[in-house]
Image (cartoon, rainbow over all chains, first blue to last red; front, side, top):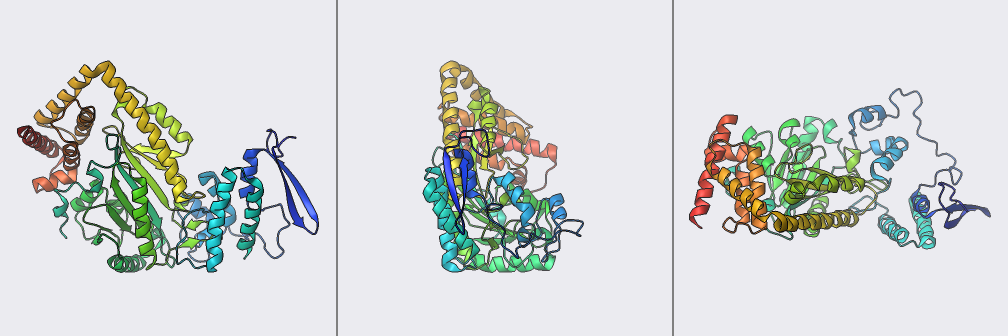
Length: 157
Length: 355
């Protein structure tokens, strides 16, 4: 069987549980499987009702940060953010940018001890993300998928 | 503190010791951090930058660390002092001359740790080590970071990690750089090949003096590009792996030089020392190129009467701001070249008299 995303041979066969006894089978080669496990779950599950994409229509410069007032286009032109809130304000546009710059869209390093957090969840999240990275490297994909699901649970809070 | 008291010191990164110091000059790690409640420096008003300076100064004054950090205000500093700190790798060119408004730097007496305030990010923490010492440097900067974080609320995002003004630093905010002296790879014309391989694995190569600088004196800096999606240990581990490979190549190339053209190398080293000790006008670039040859000569044991630390001393003291501080007054380009030559001649003669 061929990988669903590239011409290589599929070596991994993942069954996604979509709930309500709905399943989806995914067949991937090793490289694509690694990427797949790290992906945000866009398009795999129906979007939650009420979570609309950031509304950029009508703004000539793209989304505008409510805190510092710069637009996405201003950010693109200068290459510098105005403030930390830009990361949320421009998030949909930033994800592909982060992916091309870093090959990733999610922090996997140190977490400040005093970070505003639902304390334990944030700490567990950090550990799980590192664990996921290790599991994928060790090619333990089944466990990796379980860890990924737990991460998702925590992220949805 | 009068900055002139630093003048006779070498500073941590030029101590000339540490692991693999025959090839690795120094190790540096920096962390980019921002305070949660302010716009980034580029958008902050002068009043906000002033507040940030006040808060950081207070935090820096209270942190409990094995070393004490002293704060120095940059706007109140002379151009010469700023240049002096740039040459000692304690502040960036941007903080010295490009940025405006309240800003400064705190560093310890050994010059091994520094915190720039209101650079591109509110905080740029830096730890320097002589030789190849990424783990030690990380241990130190991690502690410094924790100590500051206990007193300053950092801008941190659950998905993107430590938030930075530029998206290329977000996540860990970590840049690890290792400065290498690679003369033999240069002589044997393998250096480009090595660096092409590096670029494929997302490590940056720059000249010894940081971003945009040319490689003078066979000094190169290797550093990570990616800051998001990998843990600090993983990023540093990847740099380590590459450095060990380059170390091997450089040492192999040195072995080949010794086997195939020992006499010619001996001659080159003797001539370099001769020029350094007898020129009456010499540029900083030529000095660096010649000191590179002498440094290689020391490491190949072609000469044994010049200590490696002396080369580092000459290297730092012959840079423009250092030279002007040594002389005690401002010098234009031509005067600098003459003063540099005079200094080199005197110092090498002193070294020679101890032979």
